[in-house]
Length: 382
Image: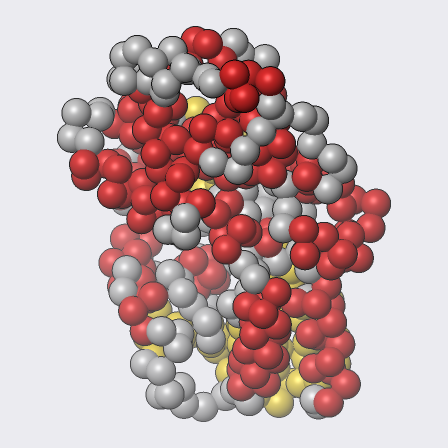
């Protein structure tokens, strides 16, 4: 596919997303209908779509319309590309620009330049203060790929060598040597020996740092386990009995295979079948995902004010339920992949005001100091 043909494919997919279809579903539909597209073409179209969604409002302003064509035209203007090279009408590319498109467009205003839902901006600014703008701008960029080394099987140097043999370049974090940032060859990871033999797992730096802060415990309940990334991270520390649980059992369907690959022992509890108390309970609750919007940029545009309020109620209920499984003297770790105060510090404060727990630590990670936005609070049962 030519660059112009890739742009037209992105325009088609973007129009479907703007009409309400989830990004992954729209991309999958296009891919299935475009058997002529090779893996490089599919990756390029995906990148165009996700970049446009990360920068939706600013590029819509530059392009003169909140549409697939407007977003791709906005990209050209933002990056200093000649739109005529893309909007040529040849090689399956987009039709030439109309006079109204040539003369339309403007610079985004201050709010549009942040590329965040307008209704959410007060909460964003309240939570992040002077960093609100810099973090929003960082969220417009692609997220780096991070790996977690399974320290029960390998060390940093040997893992780097193993990855390098297959063209994957990775550098350790200065704050956590067992976390590797992939600089080249990211698309080779899933087929690499290091991955297939359980030496590494895909996991962002921020949750890796959060897990490293958790206290050692003999028994652990991962109450909202999802795919099980944090269960696997804690299993790599060794010495703990780990139970993974999720209200949606299907979210954990890949965990047994992942645990087998990592040579980790993790028990899985079905919904409503968690028994006993635990020294450490993790509650990584459903949230806005505002800290991960550069990975799932369509999610920020699908979140509504009412949906956000519903999440706040759900988070409080889950934290209370998870707390009921904490043993005397044990710890509760409340986590979100959010940057917003209402989901983080406010939830913890409300919980501590009515529960027999005391605070131990709180920390928020942002793209300015880690990678994804992530929040963790650890509390001890009195």
